[in-house]
Length: 638
Ligand code: WT7
Image (cartoon, protein in one colour):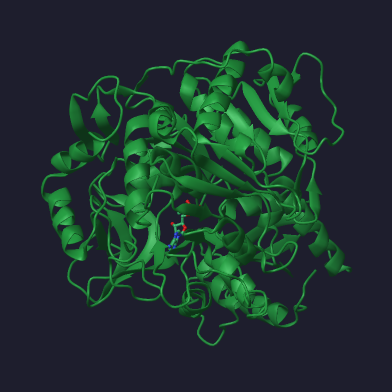
């Protein structure tokens, strides 16, 4: 089993060791897994190519580490607790024995559909155990899974399928999010109109909704499962064989297929899960993220299962059937560790304490936060009212690209400071740099956050575009991984993430590229050009404000605003709908044609007293017109 740090002193010692001798440190942790063949070298790397190899020469299968090796001790122990959207439906408890069987059968189903090692499989499923089973089945046969969040539109799904040239799609008939029904198979059908590479679509019957099954292409999972063997010997994978692709947004261009590989991701997800949350045998761990995001990959599926943990998967939303749902789940399943996002906490805070009252939350030992900076008010509310003042909050900072948590307290070990991610985990060497790329040393400083040494969970590439991987993360600052985040290091050396410094916007913990939203808006028939910026939002953290130039005079602005919002929801997904839209005659541009987003951001924030230097603009008068228009914008704007 993966070693667990017990004291702050030990953390400091381990941290020192991890910096002074990273290979000894990580080699020692990797010894705790099942290998078919041991590695030749712990680490080979350079950040200029970049070329990063952990445990090179090793052979293994991650699912043997998640499943086979737990059979002796945990066959009858629950692996996954599933809490359905509808609180009146029965929860499911799946043991390590049952999960092992299901994954082997599913692996055989994939093989029977001619999926081979290295093939890409797209998974578009609700938050149900089958999502985890499908991921593990892919990993078992060496296929690369690409999970697409079930809130994405048909077009976004198709783009992701095509970018990774997936040959098979796994989906379900339909799903419920709160009271809303989502016809997943219909969306998948629309997507498959433009995905020539997809040969087969496996459909899980989740809600018995009527669906169109296209002969030859569409197959019911239960029918396929009834025809296969229930044993499967795991494919032997190289340490650096790809495990999964997960799409995320950047400041420009199309979403990026972040590529993670087998051994390093395994070691890192298991180590961080056990240490950050201080997971103890039999604890019930509940992470409310969706498996469509990296948090779900690492801390619902792989991290917990690698540790033989009990992981709770929740299908629904925090406010259905009422805003006490999270607290009911904690009470019902005696959750010990609860990991959620600041946006969820802020939205529940608005309902006051009534939904929390009378709920027995005494099982809780540790609370977690992820996805965006947590403001101090939300931190205090969560700590006091949910944690009863005695559960530490681990504010975990990380990214899709980092594979696992990089900066976070260790629960019950690291002294906390509200709204601080606190200290780097062992193996993580953060540095702050100024605009010129110079390292800012000492404490009480602020800069752009980079990491100067690799850790096992770091992404290895962007699928099909290694050059974009290099330019996005390794070219801004030489020999450093650039995170895109701004960060403060206080007098005690504690880290506080201040938010993105690029054009990525974090709306309710969803990472959205301004470029993607602009492209979607520009598709509207009367739009010539647009610019999207963020403004602070009480619940969502940040919200989207779009400035739009139209090719004609618009009389019914409200109607156009609504059309544009709906169009963005259709192209990307409902979570990317702009909150506010303003039609403008022109955008503030420099003489070289670059949009000055700094000015638009100020206007969106309502901070127009000091717009800074606008003398470099081609036409400074544009700014006055936009400011005047913003003032007249209807509060609700829809
Ligand atoms: C971006 C990464 C990490 C999994 C979920 C999001 C922001 C994430 C924190 C935190 C402040 C945070 C950063 C980061 N972020 N966690 N604890 N405090 N900011 O993964 O979608 O790849 O987004 O989320 O800005 O760069 P992601």
